[in-house]
Image (tube, rainbow, N blue to C red; front, side):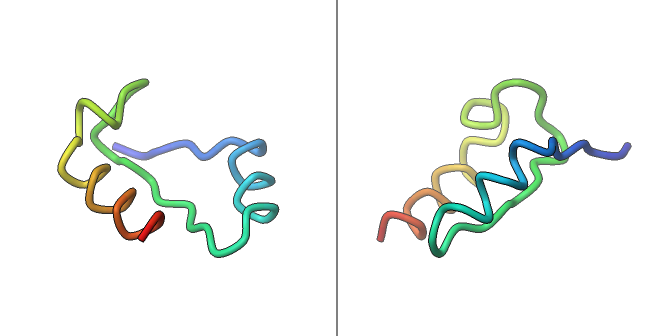
Length: 48
């Protein structure tokens, strides 16, 4: 199974300082729910 990263996602990643574009390979429209442990860990790292 592959994953898709939109052009908009790439543009936002370039414009937000210190951001990282991280694919969620097993999620659909709700990575915050479907992969909540990974999402929360990455969010905590980002907002510090």
